[in-house]
Image 1: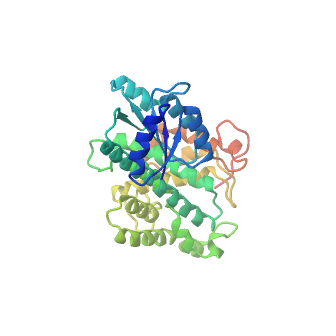
Image 2: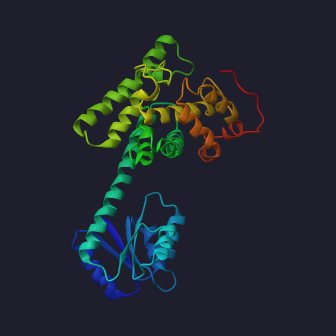
Length: 351
């Protein structure tokens, strides 16, 4: 991993380089914040260790600019500072810093902080790998990469609300449930790689026999991920991905598939993705239908409260309506947005 050190003091950079290089990291140096920004744009820098107080562009201002750049991959920022007041540290975190080390730093402490940073950056690598795998599966379908983006964003929003609802209840929610569901929800249809093209790519509605074949994508996906779970039973995101792939077409009233699970017997992650997936299908164009407006999709989901969908998940959807509309607007496919958002013209198609 390449680490960028930023400090206007060359001796401080020498000390930092010695500590970082002894751990096997590649060290790149910049003497001020502006030089650091230039290097970030030219090279793949995953981790930055910057002094707080520098002329021109402070370490905190550098963190702000990096976050404003909106890089495609995450850059972990550690600030070196002699400040230890709570207000200063809060301002630094708000600006975009991830961690702080008080000067003069202890090399052992620095090494431990770097290992924490590496674990966090490795999580992003897992996310990229999972998303790439999901996109590979979608190349066989008529879906788009935007569909996967929307699903994981809808799912994360719903999960954030549910974590608050379920706090203190009997239903256990993993501490990192929100990020885990964001990471794994794109794999909901991974089993479609096993569906024959004549069914998967049929330009129209499926007949009963074809629909029975299509429904097997849940068990195909669940069984595939179950094999990974058996190899790595302690990896929570694999278990969640398996549950989503297997159970995202279950219904709260027990009339779904493939197992006819009911109520809270359906894994929470699958109950979340179920609503996200149905909403996206409703407001998206398909070969057999035009996109429904948000208001029509909302009405259908409200009507499914307690039958198709978990009532708490529906409540979370209704509370986050504006966020869903924002995602539709930002990640729409082609010209669908005008047909989806409220108060737009166009007749509604029949189901």
